Length: 451
Image (tube, rainbow, N blue to C red; front, side, top):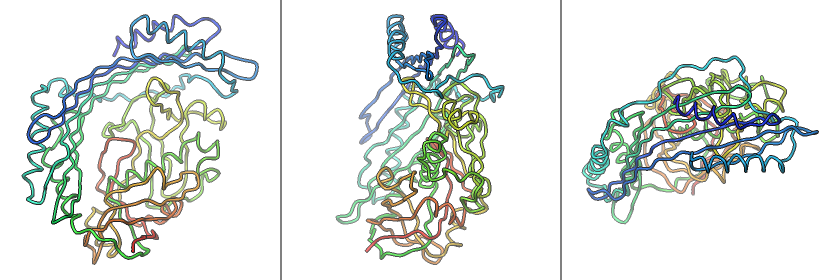
């Protein structure tokens, strides 16, 4: 990491006196294995090294920023990226709120996010894990007709962000996961289910739990029917609940709020959710797979409590959105790699756990629908208006237990109503890849559209 930071700092010396510069360096190694019918169908090992440069120059009506990137750290690529960033800055639109981050006095939390097991595990062992995962699924239930893919993946990555304004931040992280999609059959009917296991290194993965998860999800959907329309309680499993919180997180972005693109706009300090809902964005929690000591501008990560027992307490900001809103960054800059520009976003969401496990929640609910998968999120959910209408597969809940499987179903409500109608929050917190952790969540007042 010190090597990458040193290289980034050296590049800052190329800034002229009339400009500010940000250098974002990233490099990493990724391995992927796919097993099919007991053999390796696909294997890849790739390394990458990238640079992103942003140049800021002042104008009479605000600053202009030019951005450029290159997929190499060779001198020629770096020089070309710097020249392109300067050239792009000449034609950028001036904006009075545009600025680079400056140190704000918040100290970074020390976190060890790299497990040496990723590098220490041989490729032969990684291949064996993918093959064994497929074997476990194929042999786990006679109704499993096919395995679409049994995958092993891992990565080691590092990044450095430095600026002429005094930012100097570095990050190292590792991760590994296995995933598998199973196809169960009964007569002419096929149903799919997928399972996964996630960790910082191969030694943290459980092939058995990933295989059992895929088998259970595929086989229990056999015989799925289209149920009658109804209105009542929807119980979301941890994965689908995590999807919901990711959607909510986009509406808590300070950038969305200041632009009027969030249903939370103008509602700070109001009660927006059930008192069971305390939603936290905490990239300093090393259990979260999105944990990081720094945000995408190099400011120290921090714990931000966004909703406290139903009350909306805070939005998240990067430097620019904070300046637009007349406040300070919350350490929530995000961006899509070295080629992107920062914007405000939640980074590592988690809901404070409740008092019940999933079986207890089902017993308390009594009658309802259990949501196992969601489709149509991008087209059916609007974080500006709050409209929510998605396709689901899952199972009916009858007398407090899971009953017949259902398909070709739509559930609908609004995000505003769903937050207020949370009736149970699970204690079964599950750390997942992506923006949000998940746990079982029960929401009343949801419309089920079937036959």
